[in-house]
View 1: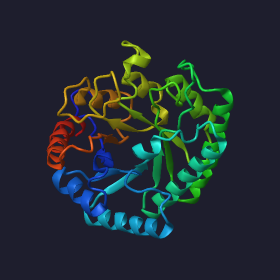
View 2: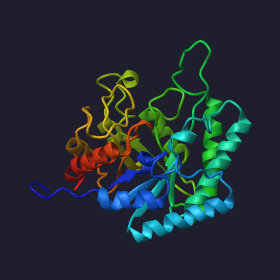
View 3: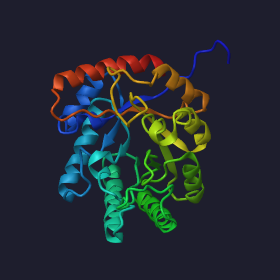
Length: 305
């Protein structure tokens, strides 16, 4: 409606910034609530490995629930994180390794359920590179079929753990899947009707990667519009469209928060949460990170309010 206030959007933060630093909920919860003034987070499995012993995982889940209650923080979802992403996961050339990755995800769902988190997601995996360096335009059909079968099984496993929504994060690499809008649309159709629905998490550093998509075709607006019925959330970062930077907004880049919020609203996705996802060098000092995060949130909040 002309002249009306645009709908407010949910702004949260992925706990990627906590890796190797604020690794327990007793540490990250007060930072999120008291220093950043946020009440919505996305847990990273860089902080909790689902393969840890069950008694350790039960205690971690208990502590996460307690901290979330104490600081009035909603944990929207849990995402794979960097550590597990470095493996080829569900597209590894060895089928037995794919089995292990499938079991890893099943345990991730179980842990999320214990911690009171009912949504889980992340990138799916990567096929191996060729020895001649040539990258194909799509993964082999047999790998795709196997991936769809595993995602169907994982949906069943997720339902057993109380998960209500699962997410696939497209990445800008030909060895991963999906990396184009048409591939994502095909996958959405092939996964329609699973017990727990699969949605997409769109990332500002992925959809705008010009070296892969081309300068004039790397546009987040197209991803948001064409995949709107299947989008469950957005990852926000500052980037230059040349690499998947995951910068905060103290850096100079090409992402304008107000424009990003406008595009998401115009795609009819104002009701889908936005999570800042930033990574820092492990050797950077803690105080400068907290200062940069506070500045970044002060930049993002007016855009998504």
